[in-house]
Image 1 (cartoon, rainbow, N blue to C red):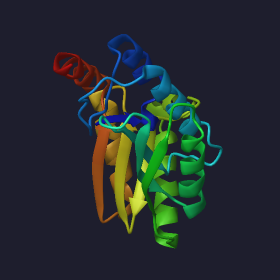
Image 2 (tube, rainbow, N blue to C red; image 1 turned 180 degrees about the vertical axis):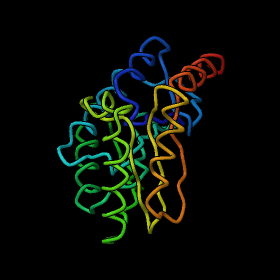
Image 3 (cartoon, rainbow, N blue to C red; image 1 turned 90 degrees about the vertical axis):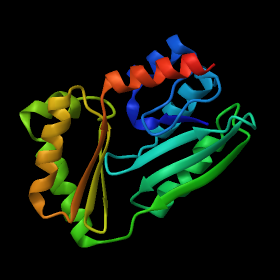
Image 4 (cartoon, rainbow, N blue to C red; image 1 turned 60 degrees about the vertical axis):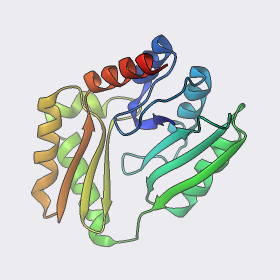
Length: 195
């Protein structure tokens, strides 16, 4: 399977163009994928007006059936889940979409925690350049008081600082799943070797 982490942004897709196939830290690349199709799907998800840093969606390309993708991850609203599926299935080259996106439960505590963590991270001067990007690369998923940081951090120091900032608000746990660009490059290299 081939996974396109929509939160990885244009840098990862540029790397993909060079490698002809690319994956993320959470999925192995087993087959070459049409890079242009991967870009189209990424753009479709990222350009969804209601896709925020509180949502985390990955697109997994099926290696057996061309045009079959599976949407996985979490969103904060059931409408987002339906809308993303409709948008992805409308992309030329996509034949079928399996929607396995989880809708996060409604919770005042979770909402407050999301906003506090986001303000702490994106309000910190070390992360201002992240916040200024069209698609901020650090996503904050809160599920029943448990925080998961996903996406890409430029450096190990940024990755560690994001975790520290997220942990100061009484979350039950904080999982740091932020990926580094070097990890993405290693994934690409291993995908090239596997082809």
